[in-house]
Length: 88
Image (cartoon, rainbow, N blue to C red; front, side, top):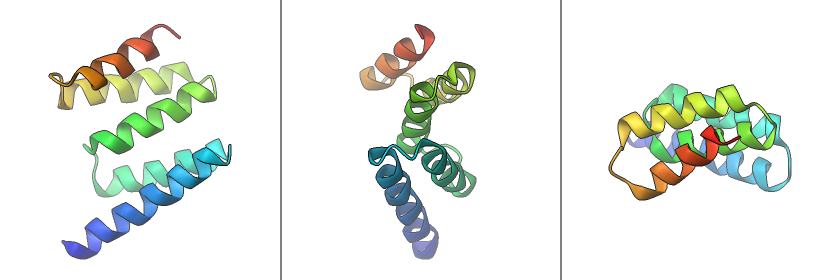
């Protein structure tokens, strides 16, 4: 379990770094790899949704946003992300 958590954190950190450096396709790849380890990770889903939106891939962004809201519907931040993706 600890190894899986560490691996997830490494992938997320790499995704965040790629996003900050405008390497959006690479960020999607890292976030997707992280989601293969933990498919319901709300932070990773939110990050990947944002990257998709940044690339104008609104259908993919909306899909991640809808997955996110189904996992944690009660969080206001999640609702904000999802509403933003629907408006794109």
